[in-house]
Length: 314
Image (cartoon, rainbow, N blue to C red; front, side, top):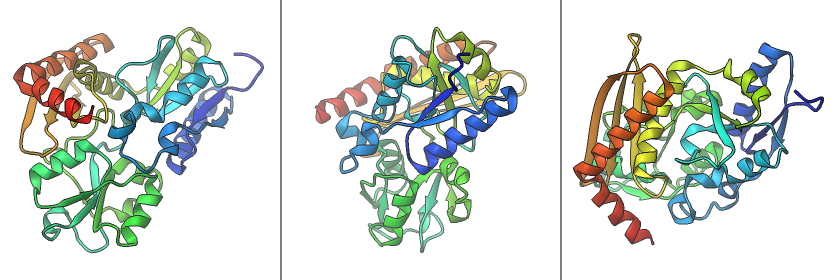
């Protein structure tokens, strides 16, 4: 390690800073080194008046941070794994994945206890095509309002009456101490989580073995393998925020991995899904499992759905 302090790159939102401080605390506990947090504004934080699917997808939340990492302005990036694109820039690697928080989505509303109880044509705020398509499959009568911004901004818009309800990742609410606002934890049977949702990934330069050795000790094996399988699905589908893709893997104590993937059309009227359980011993096997399941989805009709959505958005 150089004499300069270890620098962690982070977005400036309340949740991103909580995550960066959490990682800094973990690093200090195992090494005695207290990293410096460097706030980097990303394109995704600046463009808030359009859906991510219209302006380039989830990579907008990591691009500037990865560029700073490659320029050696920072040593480590902390990402919500659901924001990380399918393919990393050359020279960077995901060296560790922290123990996963609850990956489910949650329902928030000032007046209604769950999705089922929403009145006809109720307005639901979400900027996610994955959520929109799956909830439409469950409640086709609802009206969906694009809602961007950090957790606090979305909650305020709901409380101001812009929408009757919002759907968010539960992990963020737990980390920020807002669990009391959750009205319903939505079953993955209804709303399969985003790829990597609830997990924090630590990205470094591939050739920075000193930082790599330090942070690999923080990685949680079950989460690392589960997220690797999910990202295998993402890579095989070449997906992002522009298309409704979901995948969720569960690591069992007997070293088997259960993986489910879904691709839906935006109207919520067609779903392609696949599920598989496999004995897994290495990260490469987990990735391959995800790639295999993604290829099954493509062969079963997902390719037609994805091509149709991308053609309409181009």
